[in-house]
Image 1 (cartoon, rainbow, N blue to C red):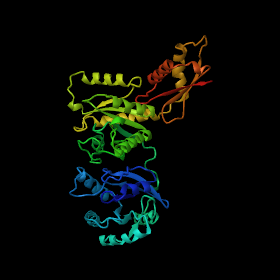
Image 2 (cartoon, one colour; image 1 turned 90 degrees about the vertical axis):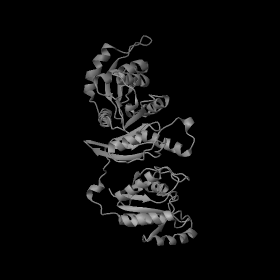
Image 3 (spheres, helix red, strand yellow; image 1 turned 120 degrees about the vertical axis):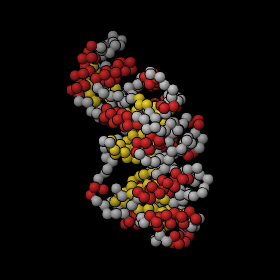
Image 4 (spheres, rainbow, N blue to C red; image 1 turned 30 degrees about the horizontal axis):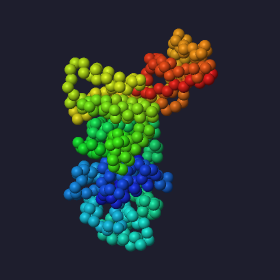
Length: 437
């Protein structure tokens, strides 16, 4: 699929335009400059032509932003990857030194460039656009990303600049690919894990907590694995979230959990499974998502021969009753056992998406239920006649019986344990429904 990169200096409206093109509020938008840091991908469709759009951070030089060098590197990578570059400038401020520097970089790149003058919110501001011809990038398009005016002509120009579409481009390349969200508190190594798996500096990594703000999706297609990795912002307790930006970052992370198939919950080995880790784990379970627990920074933890076993036992005691979860111990910085994370994700996704035939379910469970029937309630005996798996995204099973209202929670847990004993459901939350026969 063709790729269009949106570049420009800080606070000219790149993320607003990105959200307008992809048709959803995917990138965080704020009046503060420097909100976007990593490359952020989405998809746009115009006149029957579909293409990818990448939002980038503001390109600066010699500023006070500690992320300046990393953001500039991300912008250069995006321009290198792109088929067409959408260069966004602002009508009100005129041509700045940064605009001239970016224009010079784009001319050197030899990529097709579409010059977009943003914040043309009224007819009078159209006259402010003509000065940008001095950048030497050809025709320009005055738009307002906030209200959408002028974006039709802009998209016509973008589509005209794209390379010809091949039949392979028309198919959806992401159909059926599992989405894996990497979740956790700030600074546990989520972006470092993504970079280590991809083998490139895909996301900006610093010791500063809260470096990642948006949820960044990247396709991983190596060594027999084909996944969509989603790096997310760290989720802190509500009481500690003071800024609007962090609030939106946390909302994006929660949305990433809702849209994922498998969640990789990363915890810090040195601090253990804390209350906030449990909150995030409970959020994953409430959304009925498959889960893999990754204990990072294991190289910093003092160990003896039984440490790993004891640590695993302690974690599973904390997350009970849903303790049938794989626990992987890694050091992302030293690249220890990061391949095991992918293997666990693949296995858990296979468990999560499996459909167990009704005949096998009844053959395995009905003899056990007959041997250990539900307790009688007020002199009435419950008889389970039939079991089937429901057509849901997550493993859910219906037990048909004569008196479903008398099957209580402890017996449902017994049924779940029997399901896990007879079928591989490791890492998957299981839901049990009792229905009237």
